[in-house]
Image (cartoon, rainbow, N blue to C red; front, side, top):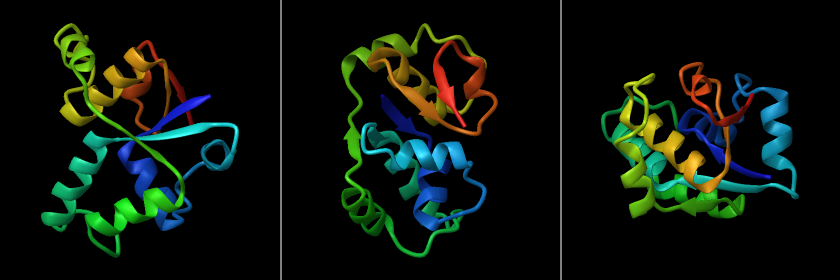
Length: 127
């Protein structure tokens, strides 16, 4: 299964946070699953670290190094994602999360998220 980690999921996983569900941990650690981190999530992390609104010991470069250590793939934003974005129903107003929804739709991925607004879209989610 191809899974796309929501931004909070990435941070909680890297921090070893107990807010992460056991099911989410198992799917992230399952070697059969291909794990993706959106470039948009890295952008959001960088913004939040810069504003000191993120509970993470380190900087964006350290987040990227951890992502490499865990063998996560970086999912780039492409023209197909951008084209699909304008037709996405406005259930969730957060632009970062809306891009994740589009990426999951276009690339047929399951999003690992606790966010109930993301779960309202017609995409596969798990938590």
